[in-house]
Image (cartoon, rainbow over the protein chains, first blue to last red):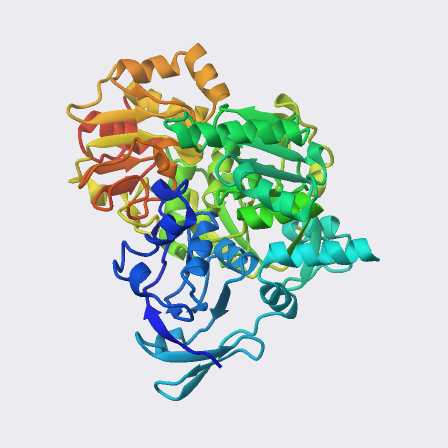
Length: 165
Length: 426
């Protein structure tokens, strides 16, 4: 199973940091180049597909702008792991195919750790420290949406099925 | 017949999902009574998705479109966003379209679209504002909105209810904005846990509808999904006056004995005006702790802070006064209707005479989308809802949040000032 490294952030990472308002009418590629750059200027340049974001509580607070989650998908972030998420961000993440995992012990994960996750059983394996943490298992209906690639492909498939029957 | 007493949120979700009874934590599918979108998260983002799905909006009568984010336009991109919005509204046969009429959260109820008991989604995080009218209203992103527009449905996890009661009467100089800054400070920006927050108690019952809207609006900053105020005679009268039918409003309240996950009681007379320091509404403290802060810009704006009653509060303290030089006071009335009323009754004139610049009725500086932004290191005192780093301009700008009263008192004093210092003479 592919694994990726941890990028660690603090509490209350807000949507203006993830998707700055002044760039909201820019193409996604440009917006994503500024994602979290206000806190860690090197992040958008150096994050690699399959990497993880680990953060403190209330990740994604603020606006309903889904570009906050979309920018992370665009950068190839595999999952965001935090003790809690802002509700709208969490919904947006699933809708756009981004895995988010609620993990009360996210503080045990550190910058640079290599992780593997299993969202169905709710386990996070830290390859670096050889620790295993529990996270809240993702409900099956959200897993189905994630595996389709988000809400739009999920609805597309459902509408096709409806037409077929 | 339900044996278990229900909360207001459970009643609305049980009606909208067709279940006879719903339990917190259960996943339900709700039939959406109304969907509101604006120019930023609206047509420009939902239209390509609906095209891909090959479906029109499920019910044009249940969709309200309001332009407020890229208003007024300031370049070719913003022009194009508004043009696309107008074309899409026409193409979909949507008649409930308000173009440059003010901020969506204020325009939606003032044009009579909300009724107690409705399940409403809005494409903006301050959508809990509709809870002031007894609606279960919450904000969603554009992709999820496209899903609603395609199907008329949305999934919800039935929320617990956090009941926040304020008893007594708020003192002079204390507004709903102070209540919410105080609550953000006490409970934190995740205190609402994405559950339903219900505001109640004798002090809340005495608030006007626009003040209740401020409570519900800033439920977003408290991290709640919805922010409900049980409808009462005040609600019913307001709705009637604004072309809506309050219907069976008396049904929409939490039953005696309903289960609240948390209950918080506060003493209204004990609350003092609050200010939140950069860069979080949760950095709230009594105004007296900020008397040495000298703002350069005072911004009376946003759905949270520039409704008619907010303008009136500021005018009450600024009548016959001048904004202390070199401070600048910018006023962006929240809606065109509120602006018209404020003009007719002389409220806006008082603010202009005091030296205020009157800006367009739109999201403006609060959304941070337009050309007007705070410069490096600029200190701003604002009646808006959030002061995240860099939201209103340069990342080094410093935004303090306060009520319209505190803002006006500070304009007179030349530094952040307790409005009660001036209210006695007003």
